[in-house]
Image 1: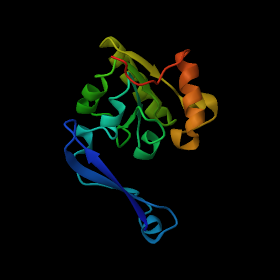
Image 2 (image 1 turned 60 degrees about the vertical axis):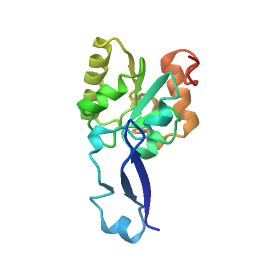
Image 3 (image 1 turned 135 degrees about the vertical axis):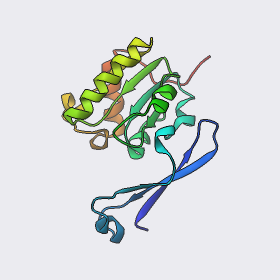
Image 4 (image 1 turned 180 degrees about the vertical axis):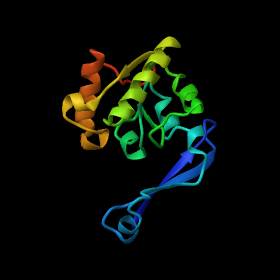
Length: 163
């Protein structure tokens, strides 16, 4: 196979579509140099991994599906931006951790979103992984990412909901 298929579900757990990711060093992976992903649904209306993350008292927001699969309570925005619909879904959690990629423009967006969430009464931490020598969650192991999150929060977290 030269691609991975990731199903996407809506807030009500209905199947809404899928993302296809081409694997590098395969026929399609090399052929589509500028198109690594295909989406056949309105990705700005949904968060990947939403239903699994809802089992936790806080959420980690990342850009891509592979990054979201590193943490049980992570959701992916399926791209660099965060739509108004996605922001509304994210704010269902009271504690939000943003871990977007390390480009300056992306980090500027993360800081703006952080301020917006804080203004709406949410606890929001933005982690710029460049501070730890990484450009993206893709560059970390799950254990490294969890340790960074714990350090940034200053306490134990990331457990399932107890209420």
